[in-house]
Image (cartoon, rainbow, N blue to C red; front, side, top):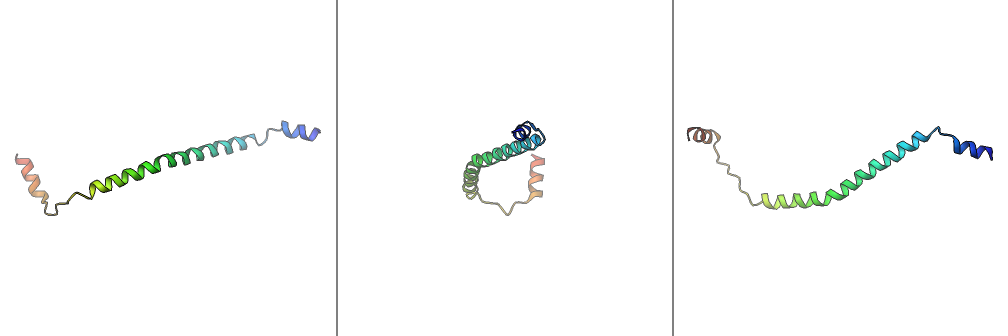
Length: 73
């Protein structure tokens, strides 16, 4: 019976338990954040894709001419 009392009173290793609990809490919070934001981030990316697919890019744009027009106006 003395061995059980000595084992329960021994504190060498308590810091290890604290670090395990702290690390598990951080990992759980990270998983929770990913679970909460992954769906909405995917929806937002899909909306941006639909919006940007309707735009046309003007390949004939001349930057030097545009700069000259902007500076003379």
